Amino acid sequence: MEELKESQIVVIKSSTWTVVSIIIETWTECAKREVEHYYELCRGKYKFAS
Image (cartoon, rainbow, N blue to C red; front, side, top):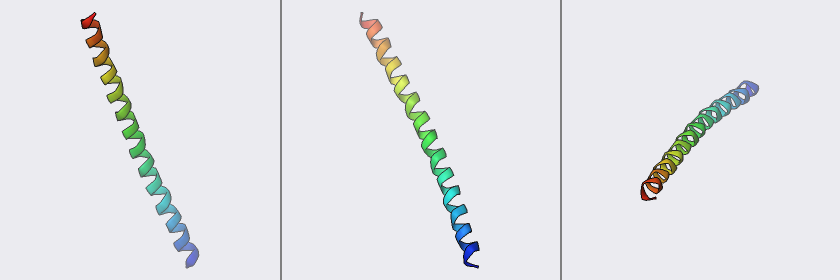
């Protein structure tokens, strides 16, 4: 019975880690896009200024 509980805990931990890593990847992707967008805006402003 103990072994079953331990394996269930491992499954729960690994599935939680999967969800967390997906969230981190999604957030990172969004952050990259925001930064790229910001630099594009800045570049555009400098082009107009010059």
